[in-house]
Amino acid sequence: MAEGRNYMRSKNRTKEMRKFYELIARVDAKEKKRVRSQSIEWLWSKLRTNSLKLLEIEDGNLILDIGSGKSPLLSILPKFSKIQLVCMDLAVIHLQRMTPIVKKNRKKVGLIVADAENLPFKEIVFDRILCSEVIEHLIHPLRAIYEIKRVLKGNSVITTPNQQNIVLNVISAISSLFKVFKLKSVQKSISKRCRERDLSAAEEYLIQEGHIHHTKIFSVSELTSLLKLADLQIDNIEGSALDVYPFAGILDKYPLLFKIYKLLSSIVEKTPLRHYTWSIVLECSAK
Image 1 (tube, one colour):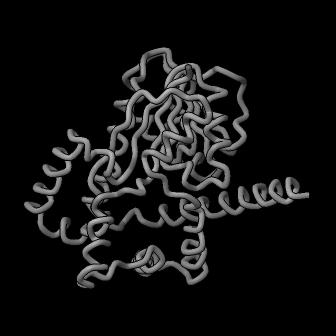
Image 2 (image 1 turned 135 degrees about the vertical axis):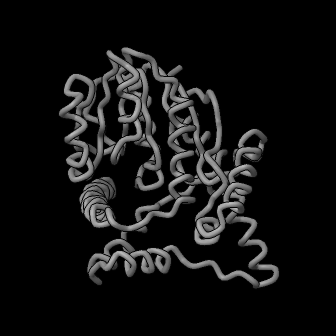
């Protein structure tokens, strides 16, 4: 009975997650005229750059992007003649947004709607797998890791928010000691962005509720332990960049301060403190 309940919970959650991410995609489509935060765009760009660097893609590779959204791997297509990319996502609308690019690269790109915990592929088929900012949303992250191990024959890069995010931890420590900072909750931050986007109350509510999909935030040690359970070899552990979310408004307003922040971030990335950045970027391979 317990197994049956867990199965139904997982199945229902998959439906909820699909609904949530399709809503997010529709919301993003409304943002064409909105000026995005330069510092936040930089943060995500650093994550993409560091992830692709570790993935070490070669021509002729068959690559899977799990939870692709509008896949960062699309940018590398012109560099290779024989590459094959499979973009997989729960939200159909995310994949539909890539249709123009896919039409230009019919022999290089395939799209599939599927769940990370149940990959619809044969064993040991992919040379490279990217799983970026996905496992923190899953009920059974270990199941997804086992699935990556099952279909992987080369190396994989997994990224996930860092529980030991040094910026947020320092701010939290200062806040608790001196009570000078009051960090906004995720819900309040999302609510503010919803007002800026002129969304309906129903859309705002769904987005707020959707953040329960961050079921687990991992530290480096917790993530490596998870991969070792699946018998994956840890090849490299990097970081992305220093978190800018608490300071985005200030950094966008003062370019010189933003340049200093980026310089500090690049220094941190070259030291052991890279394991305490905004997101963990980990390379692993099948043994």
